[in-house]
Structure formats: structure tokens, C-alpha cells
Length: 220
View 1 (cartoon, one colour):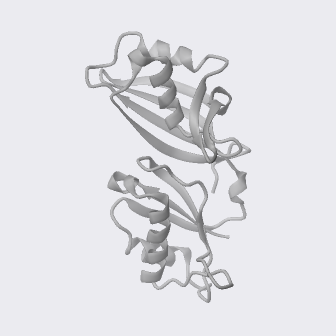
View 2: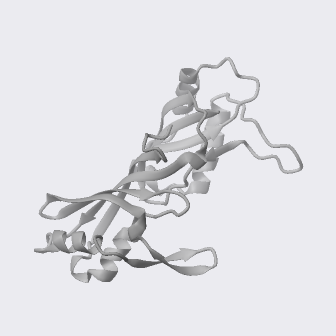
């Protein structure tokens, strides 16, 4: 299976998932790369992103699978260069390679969450957040396909660390479940806002750092 590792940073974080898919399909075409399409009355390009990224989230470890037609002799480096020549600022193909791993093997994400406070981090905030995520259960309401759903996020958070970046910023790093079930890191921010209003940040930023397989290795 041909696979791409790419970054989505800067202003590109505001590109939606559907627009990102269109962006890549145009990039393949402009780069002279012939994507394979499905058969039938409504053929679709055979290109897919493993875990759609929420708008506003930065990532340096996005995974995209694709298939080409009649261009098997092109090297991975040639494909990477052709794509990057067509990409907008903030989207960059880091690596093109072959992989036997299936997207279903991707089970966890390493993420960081930056909390920003205009008037400075209040005293005791770090301990309060640490104690919140040490509870046996923290229920957060998320939007599901059939309406709001209450979800206990604690079983989906691992290796949580909280550090002060400055007197106005805190950073949370954690490994979270990516699939079946999945945790959107924004739910951790929502938990802080709901259970610790005194620690509510004025702004938050989320970064996807790495994708992890079930055996704990980096997923590629």
C-alpha cells in the first residue's frame, strides 16, 4: 500500500477535512500523478486519510493512503517532490513510502494541548487539573451522529503530564485513544471548562504529535 506522511500547520489548520481531500486530489492531478478511481457510475479517487483532523488542530503526523495507475516505476521521492510543488503553505508531504499496515491498526495518538491565560495562570491550577484527570470518571457531553452523547473520557487518557510553559501558559501532553473508542482532545479542554471554571483558559490550541499502533510503536 502506498502511503504518505504529511504535515498540516500554520493557517492550513483551518482547512476542513473535505477541502483537504479535494486539495490532495488536485495536487495529484497537477503533479501529473494518475490516481486510481473506483468503478461504476460515480467513480471516486482512491485516496483516504486515516483519521480526519478537526479544524484548528495542528498535526505533523497525518497519514494518507492512495493508489496510482500506470506509474509504478515512479520513486517515492519523485512523488513527494511532485506533490510538494503543488501544495499551499502549511501542507507538506514529509515522506512517501510503502506500508503493509492497515489504518485499523492505528489505535492511539500522542497529543499536546496548550492552555493560554490572558491574566496569568491562577495559583493551584496545575494541581486542580491534575486532580481532575486523576478521578475515576469524568463525563463530557459530545456531539454524536444521533445527538448529544455523554462519554467518560478517563479510560481513554494515558500518560498525562502537565507543565507550566510560562506564567500565562500550561501544556498538557497525553496519549489518547484514536479509534473504537476515540477521544477528541478538545473534550479534555471541555472537561476543564466544565469542572474547573476557575481554570478555564482564554484560548486553547491542540497539536497532534504522533500516531501510535496497538503494540506501542509509531504507526507508519
